Length: 228
Image 1 (spheres, rainbow, N blue to C red):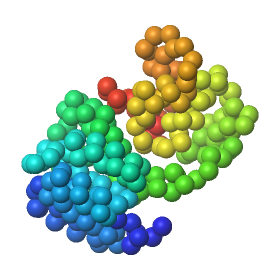
Image 2: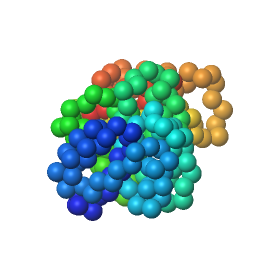
Image 3: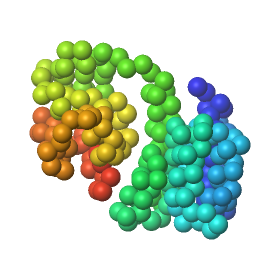
């Protein structure tokens, strides 16, 4: 998909933010739509069906959290990528954002070039979502063989216990995406009985020891993501 075919909706009550970010994204060739508050953003999201929404949290009329929740419940917008752009960096704000259905969280201030790079990374998920699950995939220096339940990390072959492998396979399916704990439990353990709430933490610790600590990031109160 070419940049000119990608629609990005910016939602913020600060005109300067809309102008600066809008200018830089337009310069990359994206179609940029702007909205001044959550209610306006929700209405334009329904009309325009953007591929990506970058939205502030604290806004008049309807805040970003409520707007995000309503967008997620709108038919046809369930899979739209949503990133919160806000000056609020507290953990509780981030947790609220992810609970509302956000895919990522960007803290102001951010340099335009860094934001553009972040947008490109988020939009790569559009391509990833369309790919069929392959038996063998490569993520950075890690090669995952889903058919044989083994991986090769920096040239070293290793066999992981099934749940560790499935957890790694899930997290690497969308690098940099935060997977909520309940999603991980559902995808990896399903209806199986899970003993204790720290089951995921234990498996993540083991993966960190085997794959490398830098690849796994904890998002406090939300879940985990795999980073390259």
